[in-house]
Length: 274
Image (tube, rainbow, N blue to C red):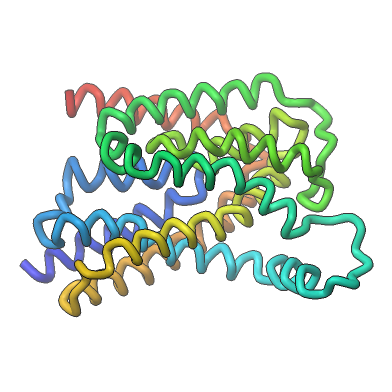
C-alpha cells in the first residue's frame, strides 16, 4: 500500500509539473486526477492532501526560477540598487502592479474559494470559460503586436493583465491561460505575454504555498514528508521540461490547440462524471 501511495504522489507531481505553465489549468487537472482516480485523501489526511496540491507547486516554482535565473538576478539587482540608471525594461514594480488585483481578491475570497470552488463541476466550468477567452485572444489579437518582448511591457498592460489574472482564482480557468490571453489582447506578443506570466507566477505561487503551509503546519507529520519530497522533485523535473517546450512552441501554435484540448477534456469529464 505504501508503494502504491508513493506512486500516486509521483503521478500528482507529474500532473502539476506538466500542466502548471501550460494554459490548461494545473489546479483543475490536479482536482480531476485526484478526485476521479488517485483519491489522495485515502493515504494522506484531508488537510495534508489539500495542502499537498498547493505545496507541490514549489517544485514548479523552482523550475521557473531556474529557467529565468538571469532575469531574476537582473530584477533583484535593479531593485536593490536604488541608483540604477535603467529606464526601460521589466522591473519589480511591473510585477507588483500585475499581482495586486489577484492578491487582494484572493485574500478577500480565500475561504469561499477553498470551500465551494474546488470540485469537479467548477473545474469543468472553468475549463470552458477559459477556453472561450483563449479563442477570443487568438481571434482578436493584433496582427502586429506592439509589445514584442517582456522588457517593452507598460504599467497599464501589467495592471490590466493582473485584473484578467483574477479569473484564474476559479479552478480550471488557468492562470497562464488568463494572463497570456489577456496580454495578447492588449497587444503583447505570445512570447512576451508568456514570459511575463511565468515570472509573475513565482511570487504569487510562493505566497499561496507559504500561506497554506502556515495554516496547515499542525497537520504535518514525518510520515508525510517523503510524499512531499517526491512530489516536489517530480514537479520540478516535469515543469522544467514543460516550460522550455511551451516557450519554444507558443509563437507557432498560439492558444487554439490548448483551447480545443480544454473543451474536449471538459466534455469528457462531464459525460464520465455526471
